[in-house]
Length: 174
Image (cartoon, rainbow, N blue to C red; front, side, top):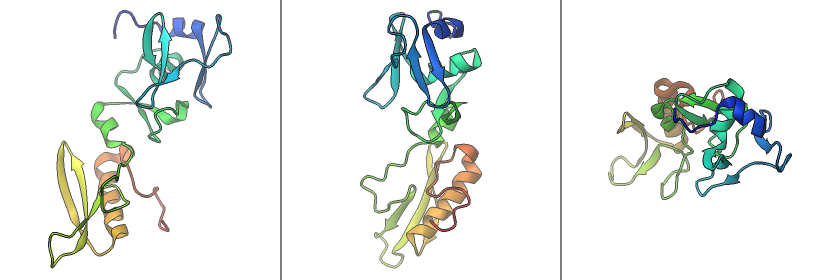
């Protein structure tokens, strides 16, 4: 931990945190005013003692009495949602497993799925996933949804609670 980080007690003197809404408000000067601003990456930042801090890390320190040991993961992938139930202390590897799915430029609306049009015989949906920095093909499927469900099953097996999924757990009707 950096020497110049404020202690959780110092934070509590300057700010108030509502764990149900995730909102940090100022005490003292500008009392009641919501603290922080949204940066270009979608995270809330707060200036404390001339130092810019991430609001989710501040909320964690104020709640648990210590700065997080690793990275703070936003479970629902909304970087501005700092409700306590949406935050967890993770390793870098765990945090990378839980990323919002970006399907821009993909042939599928699902994470980890694309259509294999290169093979004239196959013409199937491909399910794939990354593990330890390497992309691995799970299999070839007749439908896009079958491929997405196969990918989700492997994601749960490999990444557990940190898995980014196409369907909610127990959702058989998606």
